[in-house]
Length: 394
Image (cartoon, rainbow, N blue to C red; front, side, top):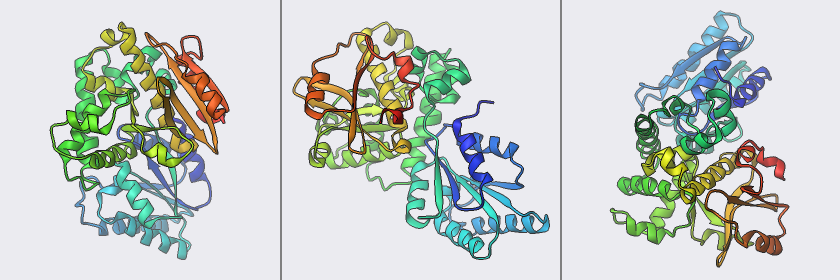
């Protein structure tokens, strides 16, 4: 079975002396549970794996009971160390307070019990960690699958990766595009919106949130004002509500509204957003078109390529500590600008029917980026760029 790089990361951390809770986080259906189970199959540390799936959400005591069972097994087995893994921990109300209580007790009494937490809702994990467990945990981030991973694990070539994206569960279904599309909608999109977001955040207009996501994904690679988006949505709302919902979708690593690059934050945050999916599966499934139709239409294919480049940049931004923007001045534009430690890199995507305008030289003259280059025709091949470690640009 294919092992993602996080396998080695978690294995190495568990080999260290007990220090912090290890939290595996990432969007739905990227293989978090699979990776942890792979580590457990190889570890020499005795362990106990429990899941809160099916446990009543108000049964906070369940966490303490599981923890005490692990302590007891460690003591009776005369183990010098033990590992407790809790899956779907976010499904328990006030889970972080109980985890803090048990972890601090082990620390005080010098119980060598190591802990791994994971769950399908990135938002719920994030809220609980920031509320109660500050200073007690380390994150292991699992982004959407990259082109290299999908190619190595499932043999996808770059064109099919650009269209079908990076969900491993859908890789075996690409031969039947109708079935693949239903899988993405039913097994990924619906749970991500209806469970992970609507059960986590206070969303006063859930239908508006759903419509924003569905419509926003089809606009991936395009700049569009929230006012214009609002005019195409059926539920009444306002621009502020849409902006908040877009932020939530970004935190869930589904859909991002990139801000325009500028020298001051006020201009960045007041700009028209450029929408970009975190996984091109979302664009393809919701657009309702076939691979053959898009691939043979150069102008349309260019938007898919740009979305794939944007998704690659977005998926590693948090882990590698950079921000992603776009830039425009009149008719001159740069598709992506990434910024880290007051340095920036300008990236223009050229594919299909797209031509490079005068934006790149204009941006270089104004902002003096560390690097500026074209991805696609006449520049860095798309297949090569999608395998780059972006942090090395800085």
